[in-house]
Length: 198
Image (tube, rainbow, N blue to C red; front, side):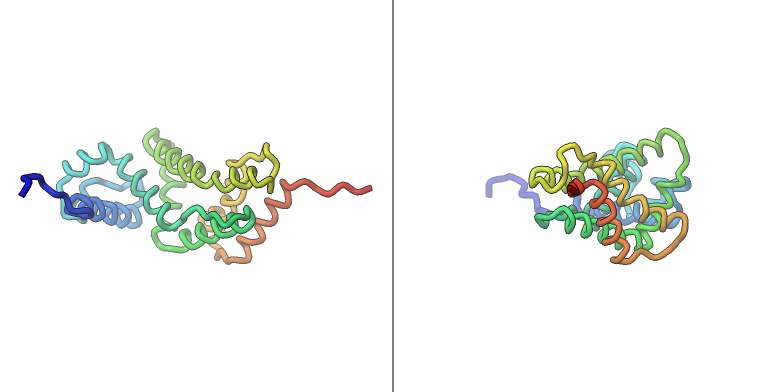
């Protein structure tokens, strides 16, 4: 015996963090952001509020971290070797996410959370991080010379994702794979150089 404590991977700390994350998603789905409380999360997760504040510091940090971890798990950034395939797969993953009860609830919560500074920060942190992760698709395409070097990655991604959000928040129409493909083609065909006619 060495006397050293051997920590098990995925031990009590990991289980508590997962319980809090699951509870956070459930409370957000039920109550949105306006009525979200750490107390509700603590009760649902079976932990003390102080444990949550000690780890995350604030309600807003808890929400932002949970949303990012959840979206990264459900919406991985593809790397297929082709920007057209990458974007189509990314949009399909976003569409699948938005079709889930939690995905719909999160979209509504982020969109209608008001203009208070704390919610503005949550929205900004979430979307900035997600777009920064996804821009690697465009960066790789520039290196492969698939798209012009001055391609605005953020604008391209916003243009692709906005119609999906519009359907979820405004028209409540279903999103199918055909829409994802048409959006991808529409945006890429708009930025790719056009052949010169003699």
